[in-house]
Length: 231
Image (cartoon, rainbow, N blue to C red; front, side, top):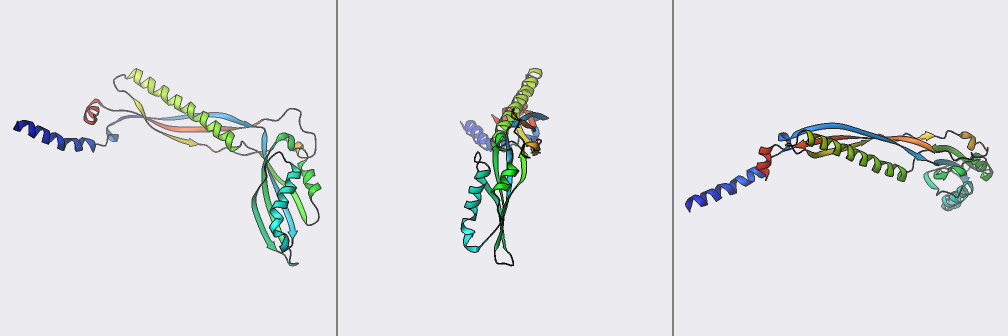
């Protein structure tokens, strides 16, 4: 009976020692660099409009609302957002306002935008089209990222399956996976004829950006001796 107590006592003190083991340095690891890519296409464009206006102080409260209403005359097929608003007083006492706004518009709305901007301009209040970028929306990029990650997960699984087939006693598993997304480069509008007042193309232009996703994958197997210590 005394020997049994001694055995149980020693076992209780041994368990924390096993629990403190850091298995990291003892694991058999394989590190891989995996990569996948795909094209993200879009038929909409990010349009930047500029506004320069001179207003009196009493009109400042309604400037933003008035500008948004005017921009809807350029196109009401997208939601306009003011992204910058700067004001300063000139020598005549008027407030000089510079505004930058953006909206994502379908290609059918891009024809003649600069002419429309001139038409809604008036003395003391001018509208310009500053930039048009064919770049995927956040939603389009998010869907592409999901697809890319799934592709990399499958690649990692194939590598694990191949290792376990070649070394069946090792029991390899996914230890870690770190992703690195290469940024999408904005593409300026290729067909400026659409903005110059010519007729829009009969067939919608589908502009794409190549998106690349990289992953550093660590595959590991735990040696039998370590498995026995941790179980």
